[in-house]
Amino acid sequence: MSLSRRLASQSSVIFAGRLGGAGLIFLVQAFIARLWGAELLGEYLLVIATVNLVAVAMPLGFHTIGTYFAAEYRARGERRQFIIFLMQSYGYVVGTLVLLLVLGLPALELVGQGDSVVAQHFVPLLVLAFATAMVYVNTSVLVGLKRPFAGYFADTIFRPLVIISAFVVSLGFAVPIDGFFFMLWIVGFGYLGVSLVHFAFVIASIKRIPDTVPVRPLESRRWWRFAMPWMMISLATDFFFDIDLLLLSHTLEREELAIFGVCTRIFSLVSFGVGAVYAVTMPDMFESQAKADNEAFKRKIGEANLVASGISVLLFTLMTIAAPLALMLFGPSFSAGAAPLSVLCMGLVVRSVMGPASMVLSIHDRPHASLPSVVLSLCTLMACNWLLVPHFGLMGAALAALVAVTVWSVGLWWIALRTAKMDVSIMAWFRSRNTAPVPAE
Image 1 (tube, rainbow, N blue to C red):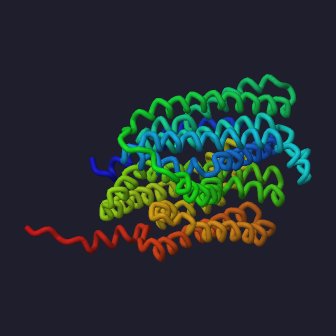
Image 2 (cartoon, rainbow, N blue to C red):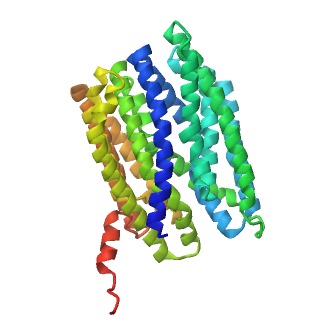
Image 3 (cartoon, helix red, strand yellow):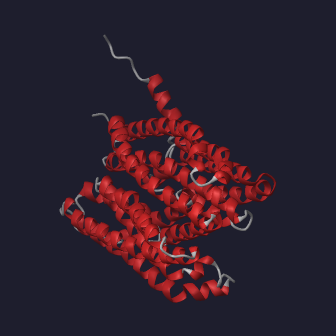
């Protein structure tokens, strides 16, 4: 089976799992909006956004490089080096948990957020963030060890099951806010159990790495050189809309915030289908680079771009048609998010066409080169929110996000072209096809 067909097949299975799990979460969010009100749904989305941002910071970026180093150490037979990497990764998660338990609430009081929704639900929020951080590390490692299904299904299948179970149990409360509070406790500790079982899969997978090479000294410096830039990149890409929701919480009303939050969750779902393509092919790319097979590396990037771009165009079309029906599940007022959601999905097409520049820069040992584009995109987002949201509301927020994503994608493509001397866009694949030699008859 060719790489492109395998990518489409495996990413389709992963995306199908994500779609099923997201369907359950959308049902919960729809019921929260209809039974507890759109304002409480807005509070719930703010809590989840905060959890995601805290969780992505807890491993200090090591979850973003787990796939890379797991694939590298597996290819080189460096099991002991991999074990040291795992100890540091999980150690940072536990260390930041302790630090937040001690200093978290005093820090919120210091910045005037002592009565915020985050402070009110601080303990279950922190437990859920810890569990989420563990799953982030687990997933990246398992994908690097060529176990993508085991890696992704904790988040795509079991987290939605925990959330919907917690919501059903919480419906027994007469006062919605009490049910909401109880639901967060169940979700936090339920997902903690899932994360620990997921961690057991990582431990069981260590034996997949041969133990033929001694430990290399000072390897942790190399980990840090990749981890910190990639944490910033991950914050600005995978959690772009969590940051955006927190920014918009000071501009939009809670009901509008709930509508935009649902739109961003739908966008995150469809973007996962594209991200799964690159996740499935990453171990093969890393192996090609480790073996200095540059032509195979470029070919795999081109095929991944082709599949990802095709999927993104298909998903954009489907969302344009189905978005009004999907949003009506949350209530009549949510139909206002249909057009903004289509605008958001255009950003997915832009990202896919411009290619995985951040990954290529890291493989070429230049992860810091991505940071200017990351900072520029966040500054663009804040500026466009300030200019557009007060005048155009939800559509202004969607346009601001699209402009920021475009700036980020084009900027990274240009940096990769200049520094790594590689065109990672889909246009490179088309050029290679047009210039390929014709076989003799």
